[in-house]
Structure formats: structure tokens, C-alpha cells
Length: 135
Image 1 (tube, one colour):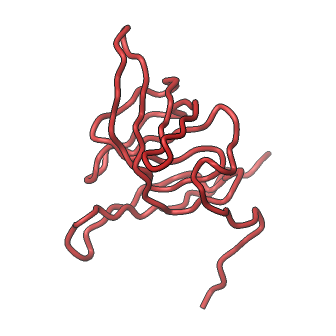
Image 2: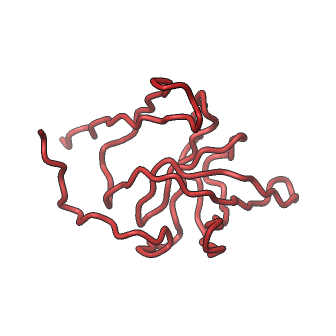
């Protein structure tokens, strides 16, 4: 019988929040690639009930398979969408992988790209076997 995945905590710190104000969100510790905690402005576009929706958001964590984004509104699970990187104006197709979690800073929405992209976020990711040194 396979082991259940471990839960890891993601600490979310609100921009311009008083020191020490943050929330912790549980996430599955079974990543296909290394996550990098990074704030990047994004525009999320999707169609809901025949209407085109455009939503301003930012990332909390990114990897080559997608991101955890934070937005003022929730997006339904399994919703197909396009993400636009605000700095590069590059777009990539994706989908919401599960229900958004409400947090003090907004809705945390897990997004997966249709195809992995090692260059969309314009950073170099650590190798998949990288582990931080305890110290």
C-alpha cells in the first residue's frame, strides 16, 4: 500500500502587512519540480457562463509546471485559463487543479500549465534533487 503524501506548509506574507502577519496553508509535499517562493504579477483570463473574465493576481510560488496564485476572487476547480506574465506579456494556457483556499490575503488558487515551461517565469530553477542545508 503506497504511503500517503506528506503535507508541507506554505507561509503566505501579505504585502505591506505588519511584521509577523502571515498565514500558513497546507499543501501536498509531492512536487514534480522544485517550487520557488516568488511574487510575480499575472493577469488571469478565462470564460465563465459565456463571459470573458480578466482577473489581476500574483504568484505565491512558481515551478515549471505552474504556480500558486493569489487573487481577490476565486476561480472554479478545473477551469481552463490563460496566464499572462505582467512583465514579459507572455501568455501560457493552464487550468485550476483544485478548489481555491480562502486566506487573509485572498484566494490561493493552484494552477497547472497545459505543458511544462522552464522559461515562463524567467528564472533558473534548482535541480530536482536540491535540498536546503540545515544550519
